[in-house]
Image 1 (cartoon, protein in one colour):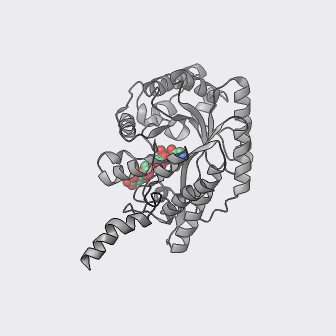
Image 2 (tube, protein in one colour):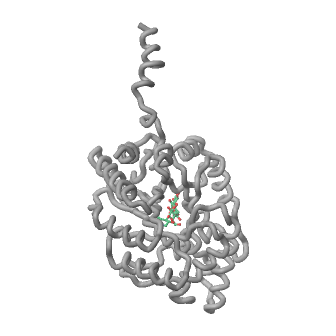
Image 3 (tube, helix red, strand yellow):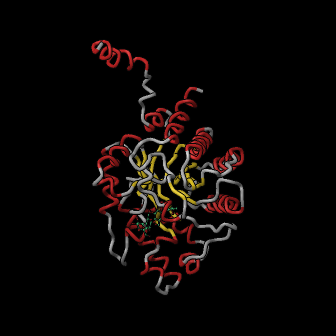
Length: 342
Ligand code: G3I
């Protein structure tokens, strides 16, 4: 009896399981020439299960916080690159790409910038020096940079920040120019949330990118963050039309920060709803030739910004707190496999 069981498990079972059943997400994504990634936390350095999952499942990572302005230049002229460098080393060891996030973001402006009084020229110097130092340090090592993160308000107006109010509307043009000079190979991305639908914000972003390209400002792509709720009514057709208008400008589409938060208590139905949303948004990306990047905002429900920000919501990622794959993981896998054969 024991011999029969051994024969079945060693010889028969492997024949029944295809290579794709055992494939990781990155195996399947690589086959179709796309990047599947996750925002990573520096804890990978001391958590072997986390590090192993990251390397096994993804061929791209985004440092979740460690390349932000307040982390890379917390005090004027004092740069910190040790954490950022660690992600690059890890990515190189595991043949992964790294998305740079983010050179300028109103929420990561350090106090020494935010609380001082600047002239326009003085603040332009701060921005240029920061971009030259940080994008320069990582020159040739990053897949892309989110240059100015979340430039727009919901109504399509320019977001009020020390950058916009001191420098004026052209601060994004300038930031892109400095980024290209500092790192000519990183793709320069305009990244924002709430732009999946055709609305005031995505219209404003579209108008900005179109104008920027006409002005000769370097822009390579648009990043759709995609922080959504599991019960969000996703309009696949509208998203497809929206992506297409950006693709028609010659831009890449990156899904940059997807997570799907669930209102507690978590139920099997809600996990299914979450899985479907992950699958449907990935499918929309797969159907758009310019969409080759699909990054989720974290790996495991053990580490996510969601419960700190949305009271009563949680479990937004595709691995649970014990790194077990959730239905959303299987849905992403099936979507990558199924469409591959279509
Ligand atoms: O983990 C601590 C917890 O121990 C502590 O009790 C709690 C108190 O507030 O804070 C927790 O840490 C917070 C962490 O998010 C949790 O994920 C930090 O204070 C908070 O600063 C940190 O915020 C980060 C946020 O950007 C601001 O930099 C998030 O990690 C990060 O996921 C989030 O990422 C942003 C993108 O950069 C841009 N798009 C939106 C996205 C989500 O806000």
